Length: 88
Image 1 (tube, rainbow, N blue to C red):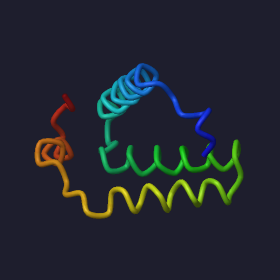
Image 2: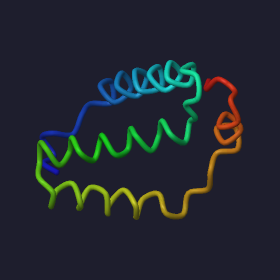
Image 3: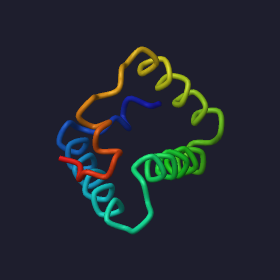
């Protein structure tokens, strides 16, 4: 992706906070699990990246992200939230 499109740390923090707020809100919707929320959000984000930058760039972003996270273990405290507890 073009380095000029890289968001500032402040922008990243603001977007992340809003994303967490949306996840917490959606967790309150009856019958919606964290895994469902994350799956739908992921699909929508990839779709939006494709809409803006095209499929090749979206695929490259997904491949780069997959390489960055492939060896990361789950966070135990977050994994426990999947059982229904509210995210911090």
